Image (tube, rainbow, N blue to C red; front, side):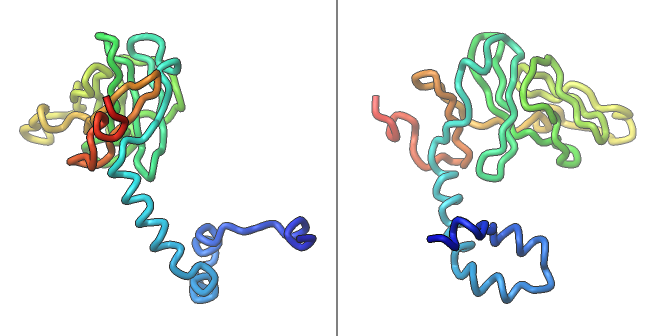
Length: 173
């Protein structure tokens, strides 16, 4: 017990990233924990996950960003009062379209090549030098949308497709 108070615990995954030349030492200590963690994440992705609270999205266009189970999310208040969640990733090269933790915007733009998306529906709005790309089907190049629900003020997102259980099955009527 005294040793636990003096010695700071280490994150073995971080240590493995920082010292890749010694993987066998860390693997012995980590054991099957990595496989178990991956299985737990896969399980959680099949369930509705609470990602925010409605009070964080007061006005139309207000947003929060979250990293949930390894998925970058952009959660927005829509003009009809509903909440939508999108993959916070540009469809062109995979850069994040919003870096800030929260704010209010009508347009989100990838910093790499300037592809812009509407906050309303996540539709592709603008592609700089579009003529150099050839025909771009805007209908399939918007931000990827996740099924989103609001229950008792909590915003829940279904990260898997198809979802493992519906919200009604999960929480009841």
